[in-house]
Image 1: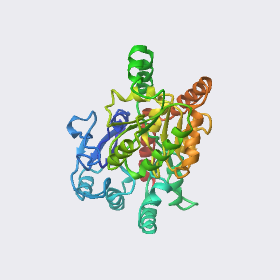
Image 2: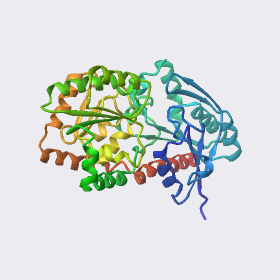
Image 3: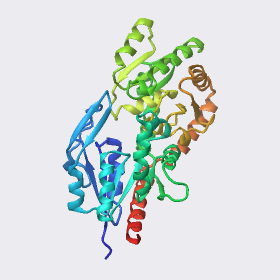
Image 4: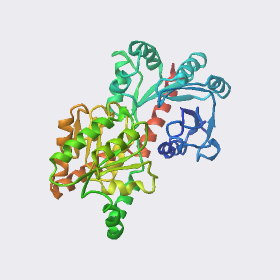
Length: 393
């Protein structure tokens, strides 16, 4: 009988949308999976608290030292992880991005001949904002080239990884799009819309037409640009248009101050929304607008597509290249070109019903490739490929 492949996947924290992905990997025949958690909780999202014992797959907390810089940046030092690798000898260690854990996996390979896989969501845009840029690239090149396989999250992260490699020889690539529960979001949005009385009562809280923003209220998400684009939309629209903002963060006070100062009755600051209520907001929105200045793979893109919504998405979002079919389900925009961003939003808001129906169909079609089964397969295939390479090296 063939022995199962022992695969560890190292993550800082457990995000709720990853649980089903990891569970799908763990259910794969021939894979002995374990999630290694480096931090018990997120400072930015304190609601993300999971115990390793309660997760529906094998998991282990390897605590360490965590240094915070600003609102969301963190550096984790978990030297005990290396000791755990040497003691347990996993066949493949999958690391998210380039952290101290990735360096430990690199050393583990040098000492044992076991393999590691780099899973990368970052893009040239997101990684280019982090300094010192040259030294960072210099450190990442050998880590990337020595990996047994690479898992990218789409076209943009693939291009970034390629930029760290030699053209003549590089590890094999595999793809794992971020995924959400498309079926749940789609069915819940439809169910809510079909309940005419309930839907009308909720929709009457908002303007006749509404733009939706979902994300942290931080500079990186383009919140000032969003508010300026909304000003132009209000001035040029033929009737009331709302802006529904879901999320919290350091710019919350600024947004509330602008709402009060300008008397924006149709700016709706809803804060953090629970998952069971969230599809209602997708149902009442006419489009998603996300003007991120740099953003690896915003999940709200998949959620909006699953709900059949058109999107106006920043060109600096990592999933723009794969999930926006220009003019057919939305538009990709320069987040600093406020005028164009507003005009693209207005063109959707002013579209006839048949055009919006066509956009909804295209959104549903595009999001099908971002699902848990295919995403899990990307990791499993990468781990098996890396392990096979180790055996033949």
